[in-house]
Image (cartoon, rainbow, N blue to C red; front, side, top):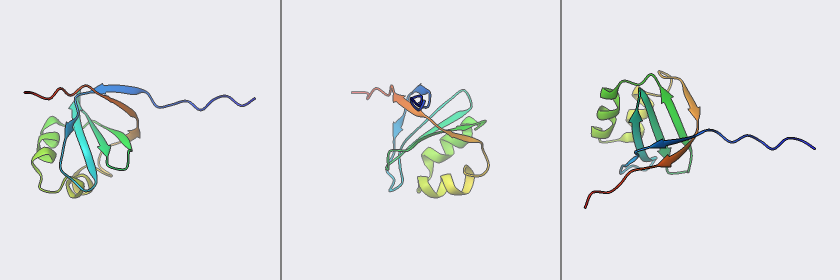
Length: 89
């Protein structure tokens, strides 16, 4: 019998929901940018400075920012993200 496929490691991250046609939420911790896409994909980009995360939050187009400033510039891996974001009342 073949072994069961291993699932990516689940990271506990404070994801912030964003308005985007491509990106559902983003989070940052310990120089890692976490991105949850509207299609359900979840990725971790490594060695991302905190300022890049804040610049992405402020960008008018999150998907365009990701394409121009993150993809191809930082190593990434597919992950599972457990969102620990708590909405303030």
